[in-house]
Length: 569
Image (cartoon, rainbow, N blue to C red):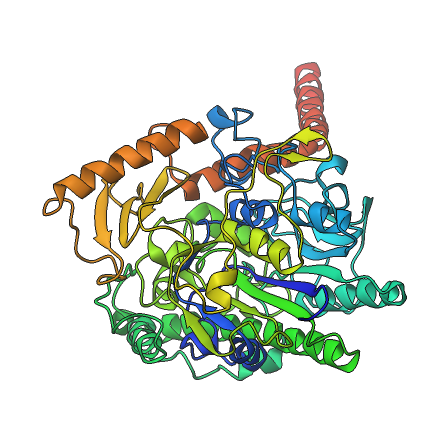
């Protein structure tokens, strides 16, 4: 049996289920595909519908409400702020995997996106990491030390507890790997195993990539979103990741063929940048793996690759207000998409196509928002299967207990370092990784989830789901995931007993997790804009007040002087 393994977590941002080549996607991801051949692909793995809640669960093995991320800073309504479970940052009632592994003798490092808090007590080095170079926000520019100027005033990077600056030249995926290797190599002589959590910005808005990577996809998406969705659905089925090519539904902005050539070119270019950004990230993962092979660490390293949620459908150019602000701060010319100085997004229709063969995308509680790729590999451990597909249900809270089990560390069960904490609720996936069991969640176990009013209960093959507008009709629907992964046949009327039972399961979950109802008229996209207006635009306007007051003073003073001269004749 290998000695205690190193652990490398590779967390992608806003990647769809089939963005990885090994999952049937058209994007070139040869290095991630190699990890899939060395390990297990999970076909039924679920996360939260947006980034910070998933990251809280990944770090702790505890539900996001109990970890304090009942909602994110960007999407939380003011009425919920500060209520139990709605800290909008990781709270002090949970313990991270880094804290537990460090107590067991591991070195611990984190690079890239954190998004779980920005005060000193919430930074990674206060939550178990020896060293970190982290971004506290949901995203930032990939070529410059610049925020997403539509919602932030600066890019909040820190190294350990100090404000940090990015090097020049800089590209996010390359830098995140560079910094992780720096930390790993600096402490190698100590002989301890390490946990390295690499949290990429790819493919979060702004979608940006090196020119050569964008050029590789220049003609790939010219057939449009409907063609891409059909292609991906067929390839996912052919890869054996769904039982058969499922019936699918699609949320679009309209018919691709009804767009002008210029509009088609603009959308295809955005997708070329998306593909290029994913390939650029994969290349950096390959560089990390090659380094670990060269230093003899590869065989005894557990690799975990996953995405934090499904593809992003929000588009900065989708409203007049955002479009005006985007044009003010960015070069939005079609030929500049994906390049430095742009803020590129693929939009609703291509996000729906990327999520094939599932319904929905990021923020939704549909499978397209919650079902993402998970690859786990331990190349030097013959007990872990190579090239396998695990079809049983799995959840992001399962990852931390799995990694602790691989390291031989008993997961905390309600106490850590003498204090009471939230117990880990996830299941170890080792039986699925070693092929000794097809699933670890009992068929009669109900697992609830809620974020921004979009809610789910999974139980066996059944899924009860409700999406608020603009993603759904705010009505509960019941689906059989084994026969209908595309969520196209509502069974609420034909299976009333199951429908009622899962509704009762959700009610019990909501009570236990202290889930709050959403304010009337709430939508996540509008809340992002409202919060940005309050926290960014208003302070910017306040900064202008002295200048405006000065100008008004000059104007009013000049007017009085003119009237006085006129009165004196």
